[in-house]
Image 1 (cartoon, rainbow, N blue to C red):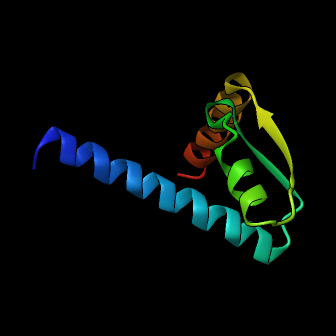
Image 2: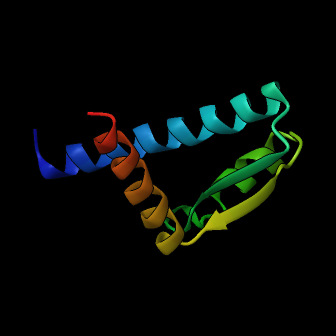
Length: 81
């Protein structure tokens, strides 16, 4: 498979994922979404607007906070062993 074909397939998969995510959130009545700073994008908002679906409130968590939570989870898991 060529690099161009791989890039096109990846783009198509990500687009389908974003569409499914937006529709799923709307059908489940999601009102608030919290995610990492790496997901700062307006693509899902554009999909929601295009489909006239309700827009949830979005919040983004800094990498520092996520790393701290991950470390705490790993320590808790290790202490159970």
